[in-house]
Image (cartoon, rainbow, N blue to C red; front, top):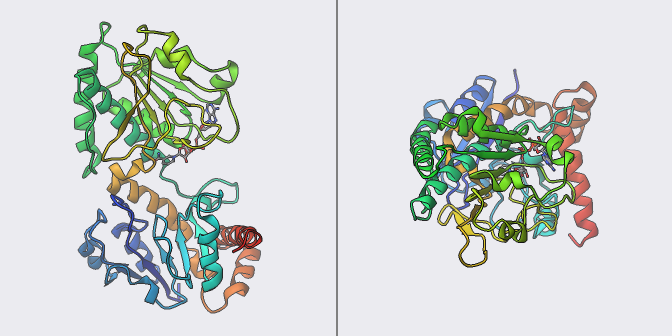
Length: 389
Ligand SMILES: NC(=O)c1ccc[n+]([C@@H]2O[C@H](COP(=O)([O-])OP(=O)(O)OC[C@H]3O[C@@H](n4cnc5c(N)ncnc54)[C@H](O)[C@@H]3O)[C@@H](O)[C@H]2O)c1
């Protein structure tokens, strides 16, 4: 590569967000390919600033991206603080505004006013429509882990307390293995039964990996995906027959509830289920197939009780919508690794040539992932304009 490509890693401002879109490993690979990487100092990032410095990144002060040269793309993960300044740069991030989330018009209006662009990480797709990078696997892994730990606590008469990020997967598995042993002691058949729905997806596969590595036998884990839930209608007795239920589906339409309060109450004391982990977290979606709770829980207070008739055994839900942050190092490494091939295509679509470069990249198939992202941005911007942006 001859041309140099600037890229600016900004800090994250969302509380307890330790993940990073670039890691020292991927930054080094980009630098080796001619990128010039600027990294904002960030005390909450799981990677030390020095780790980036060592591989050749230029360190700058925390939250200084608004002063970055206009043609430098800014990469980060979570949404920017709002309200905030007009956005002049190209931002690569999860902006959470393409599905008409709260404040979506305001977010896009900031790009319109500043003349910047959004390449939303949630919608970066390859030619087959598959997302190029996603955190799902680690969300499922972390969700299942918290489910096991929380259930063990519940059976011992406690409630899962504040959780903080683990330095690595092994440290988390040490805790989940103990939890599995605790749950076994409370079960007359000595089994820890779990049911994962959405088992074939990213989150589902991560959840199953965690359960297996935590010491659950393969025949203790029931794996359901679309085939099983389309074969018969919910609510499902199989969910009540598991100790732990992990919901990992990608909800795209209204479906019959997987369980509901009346169904749980009808089963009386005759059920195993004590813990639900709703990785999918369609909490406020009117089509949520788990209408047994109504709030997202947090790492500070990870569980919420399902309100049931007095005298019934406890049932709790974990509905944290940023689960991968429990394992920030591994989750960032995997995400950034998957994003790398697309980042390496950035020089084909950015720079002085602007739209012309984009057109050429489109024709040559180089950087097509960004071309599609740009089209999507323009589509949503037009929609925001129609709604007052
Ligand atoms: N809580 C978090 O921190 C977190 C993090 C990442 C993703 N998510 C969410 O998790 C969900 C799943 O993400 P993913 O990346 O694993 O998606 P995915 O597309 O990889 O997998 C979803 C799976 O659900 C299955 N499915 C869809 N409808 C179903 C149904 N009615 N019955 C049974 N199976 C069904 C699909 O066949 C697929 O195998 C998404 O809603 C995503 O937003 C949550």
